[in-house]
Length: 310
Image (cartoon, rainbow, N blue to C red; front, side, top):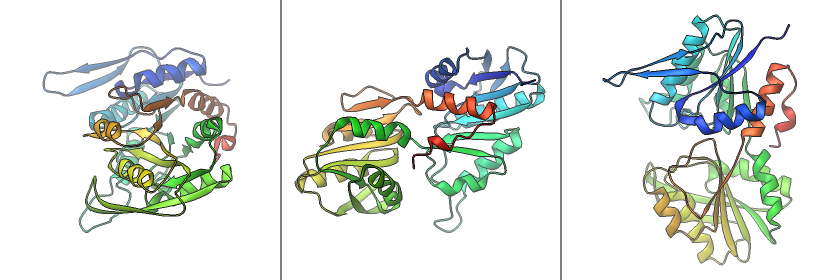
């Protein structure tokens, strides 16, 4: 007999969770989040979950409360005698801390992986980790999905002539190359220099730009400094147009202002992170159907490799 499936949403990803649950074919479960006056909070399930396969949907965007919500929900589920706890984390926070890139720093992504396992999570479903090797930080199965599943059909629908895929930095060259191979087009790679985090001092590019319709691909857009500088530089060097595709729209600080002032034609993102405000330059593609299908496959022990375009 198959175990019952229950889907619950954390407070940071309510809309996406509702869309995933609807696409899955059932309603979200009832979860109560009690907040105390000092800022402490408590999670409790308002329906039985005994023996169920429980999906907890929450992107761990700042503040850290959103991560701690997942941990409390997982612990509550474990103590309520569920069969398994599957954390669906469309945007996995702290993923940029994936190594010791300077002395005496934490590896935040590994710490979060350990915390999730300690809280009772038995499986993780996520999308476009900042570094693929973060999967190895977990001692539980990780289903790592790619936004290319929704991005590539959108690029193809634009029917752009002289299409070129761009990497906004050297670290994104692997992702850009995968897109370019699938689309059978050229690639351009940007090289940037930073004085400190979120501040780009200078940027240049390797590859043909003049007359090209360029699509920059990245996993995260935070302040938008890199993408906006790259787009402006490419337009100044004769590009026909510059678009950007970023899975996770963090858009912090002056990101919206940077975007509006830049020469980017369009920013295409997914709904893994809810937008703080609307912009005529931002196009949102939903990943709800993709996640819902993966949840079905996880429950029925089917392969999900057909979703790995990259």
